[in-house]
Length: 440
Ligand code: UDX
Image (cartoon, rainbow, N blue to C red):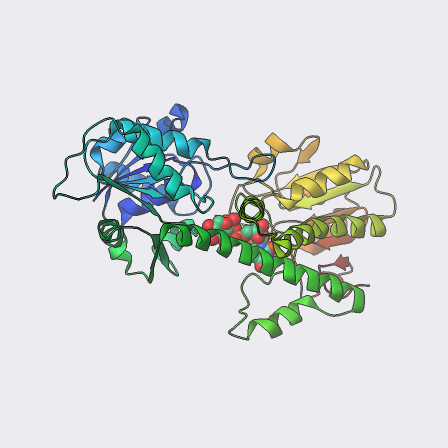
């Protein structure tokens, strides 16, 4: 099928490349000329395992193309995915300016039936507004095959891609959710995803939109729940890892997303939780539960900072080495990374920060100041009073801590991801503090 994907950011790019991979002819659009130029040269501007190889392959056999022109993409496609950014406004609401602009531009160009599919995470009711925008801006007469045929359809098809495993997630979806209001739209979307043979959830547009917000909010709730349990463990002496294990074997609960840590970050959870709270408020429901999820997440960072203050005693002029800056492993993304708040709070108290991250340093430089970046964990550890583990990179598991210990000033480790939960650091003489491991 001829498909357009408007917006070549994280979601749009992964979607476009993977749609080509499953056999479609895809044209990806972005207004950022520099980005499109880079993509045409088969270079991926983000770090996402597996993406660049696929991009190269499908650019070469021309199943994937890039353009800055929505007009060109609209003309050539039956299905158009909208995957532009929906940043947060000051009040937490999603800013849908880009979505509206794209809808308008599609409307003035289209001259035959199109299925317009929302892929960006948007508040419930956006589908209806897109439909209205298109109808108001339709310039050309659309030829209808049969009398009564619709000129176009709007559908919702939320994404559930995790950064770092987005290609895998696309190719192996737990489910594909489609929100449609016509048989034709359903047929097209089923055909698009047919090669993946996924479990399909077919519903109306509003429910599909809600599924996305509800899913991300539920996962954020799970994380805040286990972080709250971690606090209790630290107060009364339990071990959150064992509690999570014991809970996780219950099929109704599941072990995933029960990893206590320094709080969730990234481009989705914080923004989507805010947007869902705001949407609920506007609809007349006070989503108190979700507000508390957000509070617990903020507290998780402040209690980690308090722990450091308590153990270091005086933070001023102490040298703190930070292992991991990205909001999670396998990404270079710094958006809402817990490391930002934690580092800035410690800097405000006069700490000197050294840092190492395998991928995120370039992005970190855009948001953090006065940091000495190091080429590896061994250089990082030199003269440090303590180390903080803020991202659970796999390569950190193989660090030679006996070597590290020799170059540090004090032997204290604050493990914000419980990466070294087996007490091996304690065994080689470190003062080790994990999250929720029962240290009163
Ligand atoms: C998320 C959703 O998982 C995905 O379905 C959606 O489409 C986009 O948002 P992503 O932001 O890439 O994906 O990361 P995810 O793996 O979900 O982690 C989000 C944050 O939660 C990270 O900061 C991570 O470190 C944290 N997290 C996750 C925990 O603190 N504990 C956990 O158990 C799991």
